[in-house]
Length: 174
Image (tube, rainbow, N blue to C red):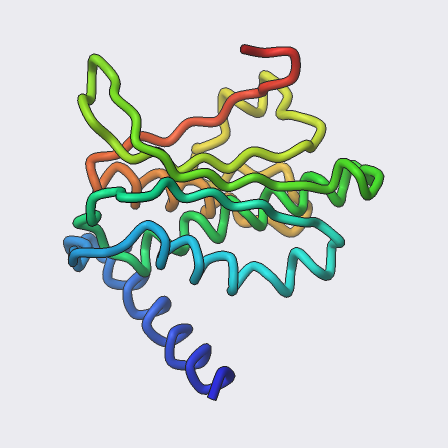
């Protein structure tokens, strides 16, 4: 049953991403942040176990429903989790530092008003400033096998939902 469910989801994912890339509007529907997180973490769990990376999730209680394409948002979260796990693994961090935190919380900003923030934080080595400047550039990748479309596509998905995506180094930061 689980394999069948995963195969059906894989088909839906490919269909939605293909439609999105062809510039169709995301298929927005009322969605739960908790469900999106649960589904993304379930899909990422094999990769996380393989790389010996643990994950802690926190989804605030009583968040309003989101009007999003849940499959596309799930894919963004999944991509961020996999990137974090790869960064941790490639840095050969000790077991005690092989952690990812995924938090979903309400936030208020002067520019955007009330928003729901999805934040993925890892204990990896950080991102070099010259890479940070090009992170969302199409076909730019630091990975030997990377195509350079993952974060570019993720950013497009988030912006199509009127959201913002950013990366920052937190070491010794606020």
